[in-house]
Image (cartoon, rainbow, N blue to C red):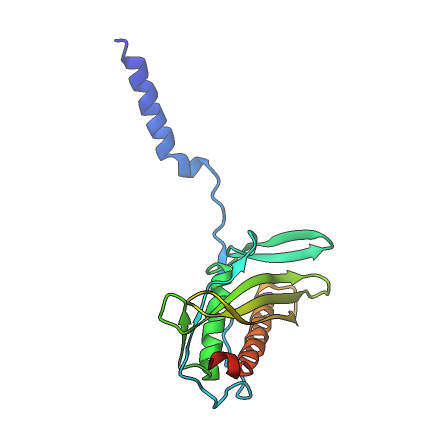
Length: 205
């Protein structure tokens, strides 16, 4: 008889747990966005290709940027994220994929891929800015990437630079903001590809 109250409590708890989905409010699933793709302008494509293979590591990033949240600066000194909208993967992965695709199109290297693949040169970077900023209205997207071209054997720096681009959205609608992220990322990739094309002495060293 002493076990009956405990048995009733356990049964009640199990029923409550199984009904939890109907009791607790469900959050709306976020809409996932990818970075809009575009082709690198022909002006960036070079015929001075090298036999070297370039590996691109995931960019380093701060806590907020190292996520799939879409960051926005709504007003001075305020940092926020868009509700109900996220990137389909973390921002550093988006940038890495865009760099790989863009530099492949430049035809500068015999191969371009993740640093997990065999490579002769390694591109390290830090994502400093990747946000929508209401310094204008509609907002302006800002992207900044600090890069280092290093030897994969000893991580000896061979060349370094930083790239900063921006693009104003057509409206405050999230789809237009995402398009602006794509434009700013494309411009940054073009700048990086053009800079790498100037590093012939370093690349062939």
